Length: 188
Ligand code: HEC
Image (tube, rainbow, N blue to C red; front, side, top):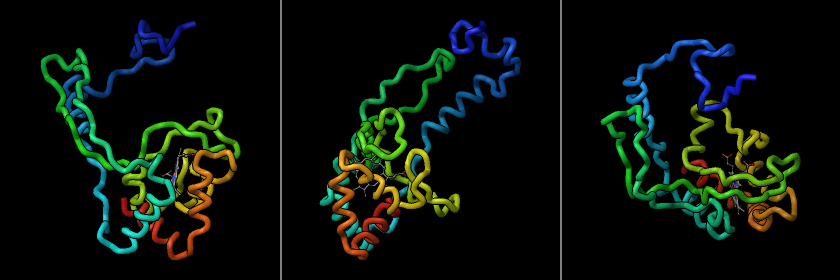
């Protein structure tokens, strides 16, 4: 049988696929330049006292150990794909970014979990705009949470969860404090 994923298989001409590329090499290069330069939506309302309070609580509850606020990126020494010829792509070295993630997988032991329960910390930046942009605010890898509060409570579904004590601290906050945490998350 034809191995579709083999690098030796012609992806554009085989019994399963027989189509013309939609882009020329130059168009694809332009696409990559555009894509590389895409920015994350900027954070909003950071001076709002509730947002600042939410940020303090977020740190105090241990959320920031996994949702690490900030990183400085490296030298951006990627290889230049051969198809680019002499045209290098733009590089963005040593950028300070605020993704609110450690980009590491943890075990939250949710019900019906994936990958033997390992899941990467979702970067929280930009996610607060999803309700505005799409009308939906579903969260978590399988959209099981309808909003931020549900997403946080899933962190504590099992006592074995790496985030159990953080979720418990959130649960024990006052309503006003929980609202501040959500407002902070929706602002970044
Ligand atoms: C042990 C690491 C860890 C800690 C501590 C932690 N989280 Fe998470 N968080 C994760 C992981 C992993 C996911 C992705 C889970 C998934 O998608 O199923 C996640 C997902 C989320 C999401 C959903 C993101 C999205 O858009 O889908 C929110 C919101 C969130 N965390 C907030 C918090 C808050 C608030 C706290 C503190 C009370 C916290 N987290 C503590 C690891 C952690």
